[in-house]
Image (cartoon, rainbow, N blue to C red):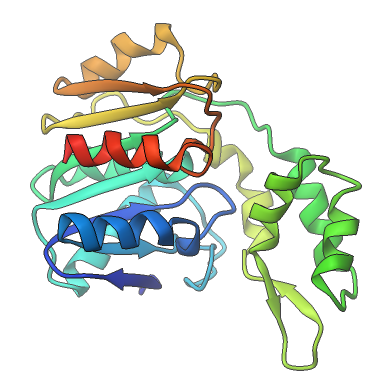
Length: 254
């Protein structure tokens, strides 16, 4: 599979993987900063069924980890640094475990390798309503989405998935059908025998409950060189909510 990506700067390759219903664009500000100030070659990747990457009927961490290996082969990348948020964090963990010779350092943002119950139902209902509506403006889309999601920042994040068609109407970039059919896959736990012994950083939002204190022993078992950082007053979208604090923690680790 040929994944779509935005490549910024020159230097050591650092691949960034977005979360569920996100896309490469979400990471442009941080990507540019890391490329300019820290001399990395940043690869902002659209994972399968997201952004401008191919749509398929299948969606699993095994496939997404394989996609990353293939991407590295296509771009002749080795000794990469791999960073992923939420779903992207799980892809990054599994890719590091499956292909440890490919990954030099791993950064996981606000997710653990454990099982999570499906909890995106309301968001998926809202996006389904958008897909079925005959939208003529982003304002119209926001108004419709607000019937399902009250939080404006979450709506703005989701509305990045809107794509204007040639005749002026809108469609979604994300492959909603496949993601709805495979929603259990998104919450799946990762195999515990896949370990990564390289330097690893787990970043948690202080107000987020995705990584709990009781998850840390299992994380340490799979990632023995792990370091934990918590960013105060940040939720699950820690990189967007506290961008400067997040950037500093990442830059210090790198």
